[in-house]
Every structure is written in C-alpha cells, then in structure tokens.
Image (cartoon, rainbow, N blue to C red; front, side):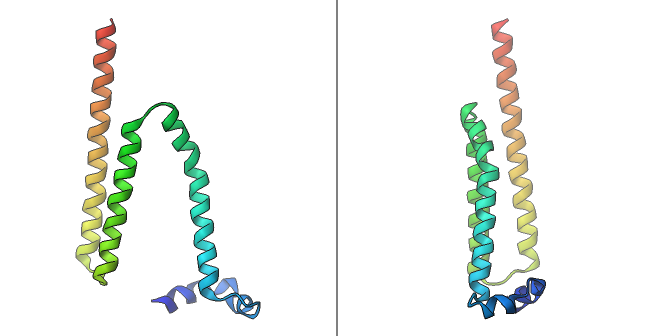
Length: 120
C-alpha cells in the first residue's frame, strides 16, 4: 500500500529529494504537517466566531462528530481490513451525524421562536 502511495506522487521528483538526504517518509510527514497547519488556520476564525457568539451547541456537535469519526477510523485501522461493510458504515455514520445536526438545528430554531414569542 505504501508503494502505491509513493508511486502516485512521482511528479514531485522524490528521487531528487532523496539525493538531498530527505526520505519519502520525512517528506510525507512534512506535507501532512503543512496540511494540519493549513486546516488549523482555516478553522481558527470559524471557532473564534462560534465562541464569541456563545454557540456552545455547535461546538459540541462539531467536536462530538470529529471524535466519533476519529474513533471510527481507529477501529478500521485496528481491524486491518477495509471491506464493503466499512464503506456502508461510514455512509450511515455520516448520515446519522447530519440527521443529528438537523435535529439540533430544529431545536435551536424552535427555542429562538419561543423566546421571540414570549418577548412580544
């Protein structure tokens, strides 16, 4: 599997990097690190907006979804095999997360409507 990944990025001229003393593994760790840093800088303003508007439920929903997906992929890595059922479970998990988010949204809208109605 590793060889397949390495062969798909041959356009990067990894052999030139190896001549500089940079192995493929170090290069991929660097690329993954840059991806994580990029995601952090994209997500940080969104998080700051959610914190400033006191959107605790949205943050809790995002973190619970992220935690669930992380645990899902850890279980897949531990099992060692990716079968058709794994893809189906991933599909169902994503659908369940979206339905859960919609339910939270409906509850939030309903509570806001009740607050506005009680003020009038």
